[in-house]
Image 1: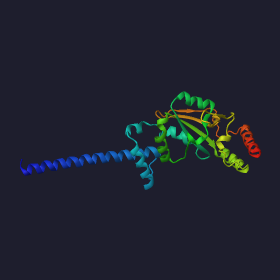
Image 2: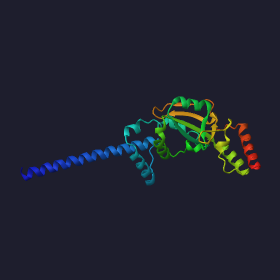
Image 3: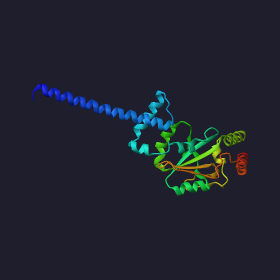
Image 4: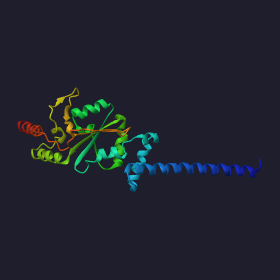
Length: 236
């Protein structure tokens, strides 16, 4: 083969490879840009630290199509999830079965020992939500939304501090049902269904609202729970 012909073939192959790399880079840039817009809802700039966190999270996503098929970050479910963010604390919990989600809607949220073992706090930081969602969405398609007003938190935090009960979590006061002990020896609590806003199927984006949702719900039983703890402390 003549050296000139070999040289031309090499040049053509190199040009083809450069074009291929350029196409891949363009696709990646389009993916990042469209994803950022989708998460934020509007065009906005992120600082380098936020972009780095975002890129690290994308590396954990093995299938881009699966990521885009997730409907949680669309307008309707996001509005439902975050609309109480200004005056309440929002938490999420994942469950696999819709029957379980309906039961929580009807009966309340049952948890053992610590509320925060299975309930994740949510803020308006959508990148933080993305990371939490990717880490937990394998636990189920149904995203329970629990909302408690800041006024309720502030009131019972003050009362607990005033009584010297600093080690007691506010959530453990907010139960109308008697506590029990499970097979692991953990105390089991039932958060009233008034604090359950509803649930989202993050695969479809379908929203199911709780008709009795009231983040400011304050039962007389809560104060009785507090008084019982005071008596136990005094007796101890």
